[in-house]
Image (cartoon, rainbow, N blue to C red; front, side):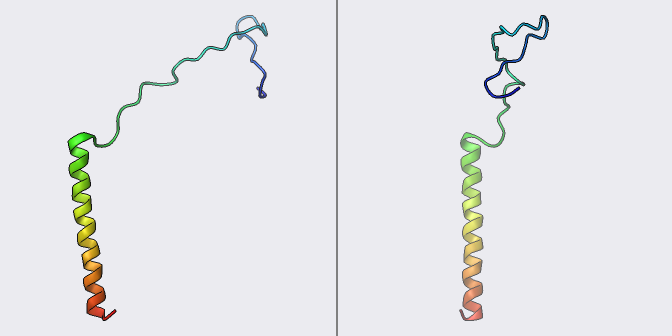
Length: 65
């Protein structure tokens, strides 16, 4: 249908229809970590990133940069 047009009634073909909305699918299932588990995961990620950055700094020192 073009913007602003309404689809005819599938049963009787009338143009006088009322638009109705219904849910498309099941309610969303939460994905990922929440609360304490998320905080712990973020802390481990920060530690890994800090180690990685420290490794880069040590490598630069060894190469004399």
